Amino acid sequence: MSQILTMVAQRLALGLLTLIAVSLIIFLAVELLPGDLAEAILGQAALPETVAAFRRELRLDLPPHERYIEWLGAMMQGDMGRSLANNREISELIGVRLGNTLFLAAYAAIIAVPLGWLIGHTGKGREVAVAVSGAARAIPSFGLMVLLVLLLGVLRIPEAAIITFVLLAIPSLLAGAYTGLEAIDRRILDSARAMG
Image (cartoon, rainbow, N blue to C red; front, top):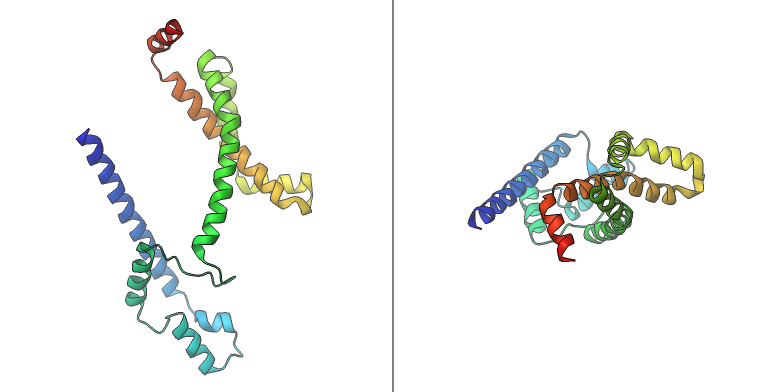
């Protein structure tokens, strides 16, 4: 059991280091971009005093390393900040989209998991499921969404996005469900059937 806990701890530590490294790379890449964020948001006609006040408000007047450390500390406390696009909390925006994603993943699982269990249990349709899963994984998501927008109409973009997500989630869930059931030793399944 301690080996499993050690492996989980190592994976979590590696994941945390990866997140910090990626955030640092993105921060540095944004920092190297030409131009000034405050001027870009306020426009070229903004007065220098207004730009300076806005830079102070966004804390852009601090050196880059201080801003990064401040941002990282806030992130570790759960404060993701506010969106500059609509002045809402980023955690709220992520929460809404995460809720939608979980709902759509559950919807796809309702379709794929029973079908995968049926394929894994009976062995019938495995080749078709493998072919369909492979083909569906090769479809670019944006291309499928554009095709669905063309079929459904421009006014139905949200519906096209929902259908795209569900259609692209089903193959992976289906493959995982039947592969997981196929991996179970047949003797265990025979024993379970014998026990009722």
